[in-house]
Length: 122
Image (tube, rainbow, N blue to C red; front, side, top):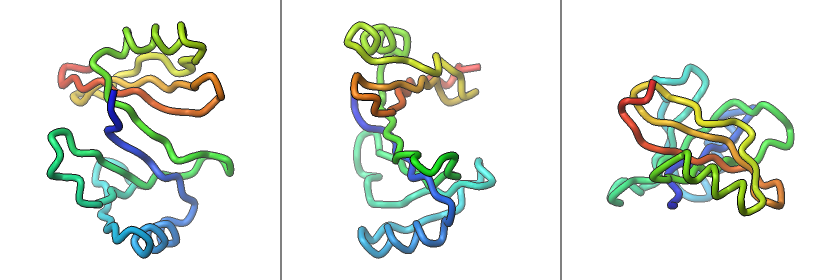
């Protein structure tokens, strides 16, 4: 399992872009696939499976930065997560033409998402 994507929730995109751009030198571009989202450019493109990032609408005041982990099988990883005391609270869900995700909690109730690349996802 490896980190493949993260999302920063925001109410004010300009504030978040200015903050992370100033702290880390990141740049941002509008995500054409999401009317409210922004893609983060932070120089990870040279990796075999580049890590991507985004700024997304905040849905709750306590919403954390979301980490997405690449797995070879959502089904197998979901079983392991539950066997080891975690929870899968949004089961395997398709993103058509891209892959599958499931939303999870670790035993300390930390949120994370698992992702399986699969162009045949429907």
